[in-house]
Length: 438
Image (cartoon, rainbow, N blue to C red; front, top):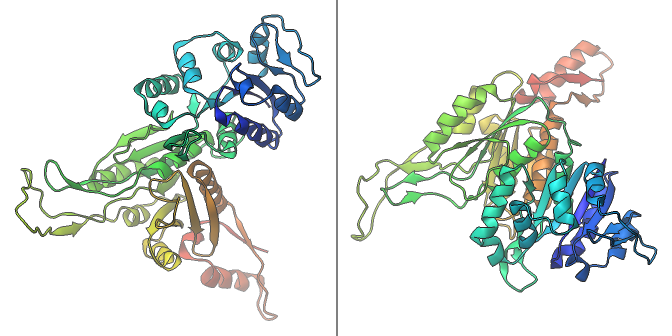
């Protein structure tokens, strides 16, 4: 497959070289198009050397083929490039280029190429945090999303300008992974119907206040995006979140734990996989005040437990349905995670330490352990979108028949050995899946 990488003029332009390498490692042929401003940050020779192809830098007659000379163009090459590429990825995508894309401005090769291509388009924004948050930028992004453009959301952190916040370009490996999904290179979930819960819930105290938690929904939204990109039909049941829902996913909005339970039970019958990534409240006020509570001194709240949605989903599961929960822990991570796995009866639990720096709640990265009754797989720190694919990889692995090599007693025939393995070595959840004893 063939990909055109568009590079616009931002400090993150140097990361585009890493992106080119990441795409080449996936056996993709890569062309590069640079804006005039991008050439101020990175020389075209860099990309010509990496790709072995000329780098187009001008709509009219300038491209760079690595020989030290420019190569002539005929003024129609944007049409040829649009027909050549199976996908267009723009990284970094500046606020300027996003605005031009959104409003159909075609005043250089990259913007003209964007209008001419019918291939999937992925943009990886990178800019100052205030530029990212500006209503104009967000409106342009929403316009592009509605037109089917995929967006590799920027990370938060220290920016080149010295400010801290959203705006740092997503990591090249994460962008490459999203592009593979757009190209259908990882279409291994075709036919799956995946129900994902995401975000926190809110339990009202009065018309103004509520009990809630810090969950942003980023992990659940990343799982929904990853599943869709791999061919699944996705139902995303989301608590309150400021995130834009992934394109082409069915989104069900809820607020309370009760609403979350009702939505999950209503939709779980059609799902082949259920991923419970939401941070559902464990307790809610026993009584909700009809009027705003006044400050009159110390207050005691009487709480009652909410319904255990994961346990109820497991009880109501249909044959062959795969169910995975999440466990956010602050201490004794593995012990608590394994206890939850056994107590709930799910096929797996994704355990993460929410006290670790830079990962977990509200962060763009995460680290976790994918825990099953028989295995423990460490998933080290990575962007949440990348981690989502790793979790889906492990879920799909649970569907595959397992092979066990078991020493056979001299007086034990093959049937007796299989019965022993099934009764002693395989947990109840796995008994629903085929087991091959070699």
